[in-house]
Image 1 (tube, rainbow, N blue to C red):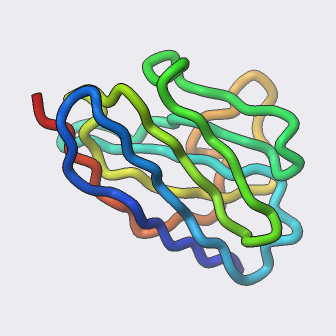
Image 2 (cartoon, helix red, strand yellow):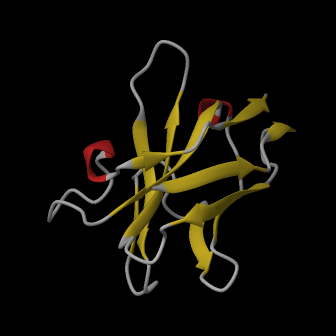
Length: 126
């Protein structure tokens, strides 16, 4: 079992920045990938960014490429999402997730992940 707890959400104006954190505990050594997804009201959950635990590969949704950066601190068992140049359309609940592997060519798919946090709200005003 893996437990994930997100923090760092909040309300910002367009153009601002936030950094989300996700603290992992439990049986984390077997995890191969971790990622962030988001879900806006009335919309399906979508993958935002994925990283493998060795940190050698990262993947981003086109909508956040160049603005968001996913990273991890293995010693602290913490995943981060640095979000810059935020837009109102980034408003959503953001979820941290962990899994063993991803389908080749589809690293952002939510089906890749076995464990999910409770989410942290991000609201961007214009």
